[in-house]
Length: 241
Image 1: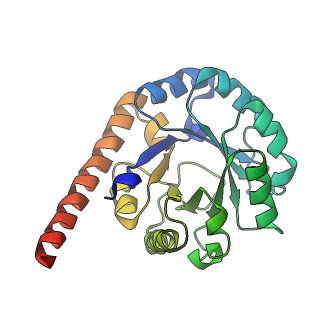
Image 2 (image 1 turned 135 degrees about the vertical axis):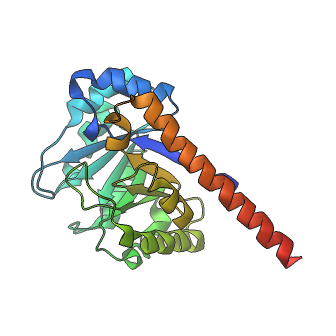
């Protein structure tokens, strides 16, 4: 595992208990979360409705962690300013359905925020070729967007590998994030494929043993994978000598 690619965890509050949202986010922060993932849905781009800027404003008072806003909405450009005012740190917008993706990305950067482009499971990695150089991060959806509690789509693994190769070739340092069905079983698969940021919702906030235990379990699975990768790289280096 490359040192710059230490895996980060981004708990998704879509799966949180909203009656205890501040408390659960605080638990995740104390347990080592790197950022908080906020899913915004408009009922048009995806068949579901979810939280808006007021939730982000409340979260900003509850945590010091970066808040990344996943805009699964038809016209993300119309809502960027209000989410910035609410305290957002970064925006994730989809390649799908965006008539002028470059304009959207440039607007995000003009606002001084980190820019991510997300691609759905059926969207090929190649669509990122002309935009990746302008990004801080790419998000590979490992489920179809719109709902939590979905099963990980294993056929996305080769695409994660292709995105990693594209990033290394065109924009080294750009993070590769994955979102959907991530738990202690699937986390090692996406890390081996090249993911460096993992969004996890149900496996963290719905764990009967609590948020802290769930975070520890997920981190242990990731650390074990990183150790295996380091050993494999060392063995390959020895063979090449």
